[in-house]
Image (cartoon, rainbow, N blue to C red):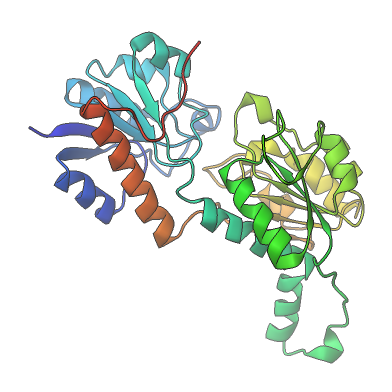
Length: 333
C-alpha cells in the first residue's frame, strides 16, 4: 500500500521517481507563480488551499519549505497527516504549535545544501569586493585595461563576521579561514561549544569588528531585520555584506540607503525580502552599482538535490518504521 505525499513545493522528476520507488504516491500542489497581494501578506493562494483540501484524507506526508511552511488551518484540512518534512534547512512558516497539539512529526534537511550555499557566499563576496560585474560590463562594451583602472581589495587577511554559525555558517568559515586566511568571528544566540572562532555577544559588536559580514541566519520573527541601519553603519564605508540566509534578516531599505550614500562599500545578495515573488524593492536596489544579486539559487546544485532527496526519504522511512528520525525539528513546548 502506497503512502500519500502532498508536495507544496516543486519536486523534480528524479525526486518523484525516488519517492515512488520507495512506496510513496506524490501529489503535487505547488502554489501558483502568479502571486496576489494577499499571498504577499502571508495568505495562501486559492490553488494551494484547493490542493490541500482535495488531498484531504489521502495524505500522510506534506513536503514543504521554510517560506511556504504549513499553517494550522491547512493541517486541519488533512486529518490523516502524520509528518511534515521541509525539503531545506528552514521551517519558519510551519505552525509548530499546531503540529505539537496534533501530535505530528516535523523534519527538515539542515545540511543538504550547506556546501553549495557556502560556495555561493564566497562567490558573492568576491564578486562584490572585486567589482566583477562592473569589470565584465567594461569588457563587453569593448574596453580593456585602459578603461578599467579600479583597484579592488583582496580578501586575504580580512576579518569575516558570520551571523549564524549553523550548518551553512560552519561551512563558510573554513572556506574563508583556510582559503583566504581570514580571521573569523560570529554571532549566535549563544556561543557554539568547541568552535575555534571568536564569538561576539552582539551583532553590533561583530559588525564593528568585521570587514565583511555574511548573514547565514534562518528566517522567522526572531531574526527579522537583525541587520539594520545601525549594524550597517557599524560595518562602515569599507564594509561588505553578503546574505545567503533569509531575505527578512536584512532591512532592505536601510541597505539601499547605505549603498546609495556609500556608507558601505557593497553587497552580495542571494535572498531578499518579498520572496518568492520578485522582491518589491529590487528595482531600487539594482540602481546601486555596488551590489550583486542572484535569485535565491545559492543552494541549487545537483549534489544538494541528491543529498536532500536522500534525507527526505531517510526521515519518512524512519517515521513509518517507528524509528528515530535522522533530522527532526524539536517541537517541544
